[in-house]
Image (cartoon, rainbow, N blue to C red; front, top):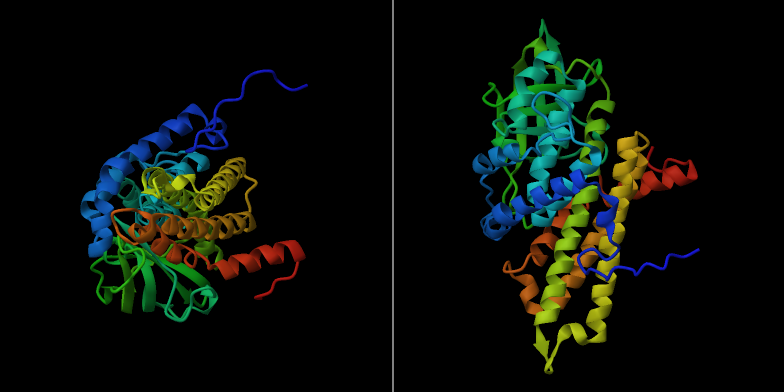
Length: 395
């Protein structure tokens, strides 16, 4: 029997009334992060993007006070929030800029998670409280110039020398690299793939920033150079000696991207809608023309679909039923969808769509990186294909 209650009016900002799927606490967390992004990120990120800078020294402690650094981890100064709450924070951060969400993701889901999940108690006590507060930045050294989608082919090596370890190799495309107080570096050893904590200033360890990027410009991206770096025995993460270590961290970060991409898509849709309602041609707002309404309809469809997928995966993660293959589906669909939203929004804005006065071209450029980092779209498609066919295409 259908209800006789009147349905609420359509809200362009929440077409499917997805707010109703969130708890009061989750909405409060989301709104707090949204306000931070509105006040601290949006007014400045266009300039950061244009000048290829980001004030990490100021921003990281503010993010620490906000409580989003390692917010889904328990103890050691971390908030212990739910996976869904963490996802909502990622959504709002990436609605500001993918580079800011990347900063938080790499800090919490890669560097901090590696220490929290695979480190010793001494390592956790030394690093996690400072990282949660934004007093120490971390990075995650896995990708190499010749080892991206196939991390098992990494050339970085670590060998024992008495009780010490000697690391030699090179890591590439490392977010936060030169700004980091500690790098989590993964290397091949005779015992399997091991993780090592390499503090800044260690002899033989250097970083070099990657310039001339046209994407993720409000983000530090570096090369890590390890020239026979000597580390004590207690620098190794003791609880893992296989690719399970770095891959578990990557899955945490990819989960955040599922949410973040939905936020980037939403920001583009909202910019296009506002512009279409204000921009007048032929004595009418361009929002009155059928072709623009079709673009807006497809955008709002994709943004709501992506958000619904993110919420569902968040509930699965909180329930302990989320698999890496589910995250692959979310990342593949949500990032590709956000890219299409950004491209359509750019067309709605016309020439204004290519300027930094509006967020669209910045998001569109950023998403061109998001679609290939933390697992390329092609690899995630193969993961999904393997899950549905039972045949692994790349192994």
